[in-house]
Image 1 (cartoon, protein in one colour):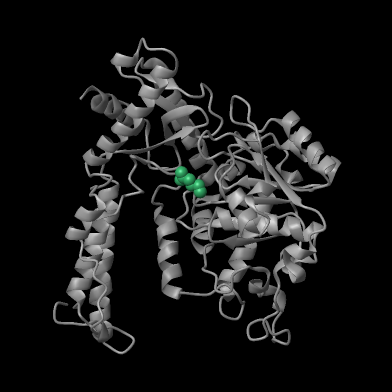
Image 2 (cartoon, protein in one colour; image 1 turned 45 degrees about the horizontal axis):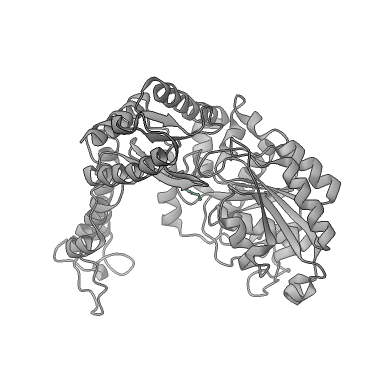
Amino acid sequence: LSKMLHSDLLPKGSPEVTREFMSTLVTLLLNYVEMQNDRTSRVLEFRHPKQLEQIVDIDVPDEESPSNLYQILLDCQQALQYQVRSGHPRFFNQISTGLDMVSLAGEWLTATTNSNMFTYEVSPVFVLIEKAVLQKMRELVGWPTGDGIFAPGGSISTLYAIHLARHRKFPLCKTKGVYALTKRPIIFTSAHCHYSIPQAAAVMGLGTDSVVEIPVDEKGRMDIDKLEEQIMACLERGDEPMLINATCGTTVLGAFDPIMPIADLCEKYDIWLHADAAWGGGVLVSRKHRKLMNGIERANSVTWNPHKMLGAHLQCSAVLIREPNQLFSCNNMSADYLFQQDKHYNVEYDTGDKAIQCGRKNDVFKLWLMWRAKGTLGFERQVNGLFELRDHLVRRLNEFEDFELILPEPECTNVCFWYVPPSCANMVGNRRYERLGRITAIIKARMMDRGNLMVGYQPLDDRPNFFRMLFSNAASTNEDVDFMLEEIVRIGHE
Ligand code: ABU
């Protein structure tokens, strides 16, 4: 391969060289997969940006064929070496983790077919699969009919929902833009919502000031009395209450806003109810934990990211809509070159004209393949297992004196805590927490330098930095949790 160039590969080169090149790549990838599952291997080999620029050749060349195929494989190997191994059982840093083999197979197939989802004529199988999976997800929400679409991430899924809510109250905005707004539309959401809510308001020209953040209770759930007060204040100002976002699994604390009383307010004041279940939506597959989302069938729209709790590869996010045809009415542009109405098949299968993108990646095949391999019951076991890891961690945190839990009974699989070194054990008040916050950041930095573990941290409201453990990786075990605690104590003692 060191004597071969890209031009020796298909489509113009030889099948044999292509097979050798690709099978060597597959071997590299499988080595990477095996290494990720070996707990003696590191989660990351951290380098500061300037150091990494010296190690990795990132030059973007102008000459044709500057690298032979062997070099191209070395480039791949180097990328794998310094990329964080988010499938490692001790990678707890993010909400989307893990490396599901069936999902990976689906992603490889997806990349190989390189299909565009906008029309049935170019993606017949994947369009049917998307329809079936959306239907299954809607059934889990509790809707016999409806609509939906896979979108590039939870933020865009939520943007779809907010756009629909505006279309419902101000349909003329589709042609006249914000000039058609006869009143100021207001979005209500908890103070702990994901930042995609104000971002959607900004993108839609409503402005972030159109988002009213409602205070949360001690568990991080939206305060319903305060919500109603704000709706009434909005009406008194002459503004239009447009949408309430109920977060199902907040990013930091994992709180679930109470959907039933929020849905009552939505009915009382004629407001669109969106549930941002990007993270928590996974509980819908669990008969044990789906009660966290009681009332979800009363929502008008739901964001649900299977790339989070269900462990599908990034990206895999859907927005589900209770009523059919709304996406089309809101988004269709009827581009003649794609969505000809006189095609020889049922053009309702051309999903592109209800999307806000034109080209759309196939994000559903890997999820469908996982569903075929595990069934809903397999997903249920997986999600229940994540909650068992959470319970194990909470038990251990209560046993150790070196830790302080933020929430004694977290609702989701987020577990937030401070490490309390012996030197802070008897400190009280602000001084204690300021110190714990500083220590958290120092431990995280050392953890990354050591490379055998990754846990996130952040401040929240008046709480200085604390660790946020997230369970979304089906590969993690109780031993990995114990390792994490011991490692934090080890670093703390150094
Ligand atoms: N979209 C929310 C992801 C946040 C996280 O992984 O921490």
